[in-house]
Image (cartoon, rainbow, N blue to C red):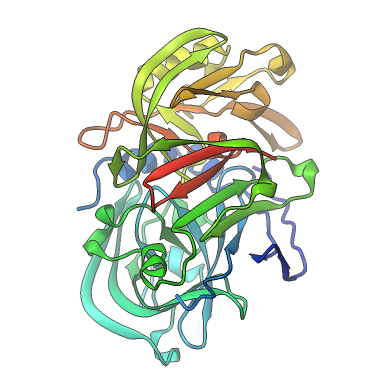
Length: 395
């Protein structure tokens, strides 16, 4: 696990009507979960079933994303009046906003900032219960309503009386070791617990969002000088990608789900016609275990039994095959440098396959999950107006 923390001085710039915020890079929560055998459990529960602003309309809004060493991207939200700032994962694989509540005594809450409703003049608490089950246990909470802003700067874009959850009990695992306080779901409202409308949906309903789209640019190259990435609201930023965008229609409005035509490794077919989702809350790229086993075999990866990861020889990256997804008739290749995650531990570099086996049970599955291993190389646009997902080669 890399433990170097890079902190930049807070600054604010605006280019082409986009709001931009500084980014911070912190250690990997995924690494900790894997070492404790909890990552696959966390993922399998997340997908085991589907969960039954004040803005200038002439502008796009961008939110900074921090990066857990290519394992998790997060940014800031402000809740309340005056605003209380929290670090959250912007997760397209879920649809609820929650942060630690003042009454939460779990160790995960003790180590993170808690929301104080009494300190907000616009907060309205309820007795409505809130539950989400994760791999390490169940998160309990209650529903509240307050002003929520994307970002913690004075010019942040906001929605009034946004429903969110204040956690009262948090399980261990990701929330104990994570540098983020909570999660802001950006999936469809249909999978929101308690049928709560998402912040982005409320922003659209306010009439102040020029385009009902958001987009993610995830920086994967430490040498580039970019420390994390960018989430753009109500528009996209063409400076973050090359060439033309290619769109695929959403086939199921819960997760951002679509069809993939085929997958091949070095020109050899591995799978055809399968369902996938684009998920910014997942660090790796997952698929059914039997298919992923074949993919890892084809790239020359070997499995570490206890940990469950696949590793490759770092010296062989240049000779490893390209992995190509065909989406809506267009090829999206991943080079070894893109699908292999390089991590340093005690001065030694390990090369870990970005492909992990995960059997998602019906009704949600079987399902492939295109996490940051894919979204990093490909700028990704989530178009709620036309119910489609767009991809282009990221700069």
